Image (cartoon, rainbow over all chains, first blue to last red; front, side, top):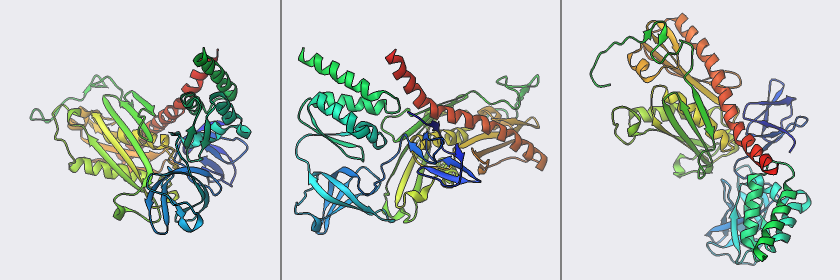
Length: 205
Length: 249
């Protein structure tokens, strides 16, 4: 992957407009996290860290509380998400696993979720949220490879929770963990495809 | 130290007891990402000091009354293990560990971008497994790497070192014996980027010139420590990369 490995306080480039995970000081842009900096750009892609919701993200959460107005949902970030019961016909119970989209997040970090769907059955895998783009891949390439190889139905939440159902789940989990481990290296999709081919062949034979 | 002499010869033939020159650091080894369950962690071996640091968070603040509506709070805990010194210590918090928890927390409060995570807390735990002088500096250095390893946004890494006076000479990075029998001890911490002071403590009597000399000596050493911190953080990812590349060949 392109980009220079930087640590907090390290200079990324000359410039004044800081992007994500960067700040400007005396005409220089510096990183605030351990991550990969684009030499031309002004932002840093974090290699670790907690998930922060963005409007439009699909997340997978666990219902934490049932109130009259709605449900608090643990979405693996420092703040709970909230499903307004007015917005949905489904009634959720404690411990339900839901997939929902982030509608908005305000300055007090209240997170509103919309279009919640209850997920029934299946298994949940937790990975680091910064690795999610890699697990999905360019135009779903990585996820398609894993789904085709294992035959599982996979739903990836932007918050690092992955829901898997059916097919060879063990194989899918191993492939996803492999992507998580090697996320910062190049040529990964090809290696995963090879891995899926080899491993699924082994179980048959 | 129990009983014994109150003075001790700390310099032999112009060298210190462990053979170091006056402006020489003890060997420092830092490893980042050593714990699986913590969000971020680091282990440091600084001479005979062995310190492990772990970071959790940001996560919802408990107890709620400590919550700050505008920024995250840092909860720091420094613990000197009972088996870390030559005399078996008592377990549990004491005056010293409360003080060190406080100075470690305050060193990071201005460096971590707390405003990005209102109403949350960041938990920072430092365990000293073996102590031989300068544990607060080693703890700060390890905690700094652990915070960065947890992906918590901060302006800077904080590096620290102790400078002291033994035999009327300014010396860098005092060991336990030098600290006990020496004349003065100044642990201090600097921000890696612009050398702002993050911690400054001192005991003993020093002249203005001696303090300036000590600060100069310490600043140079802090730069070296900072370099080691950066290397430790980068090594985590570079070693993984090499592993994968080796597998491909």
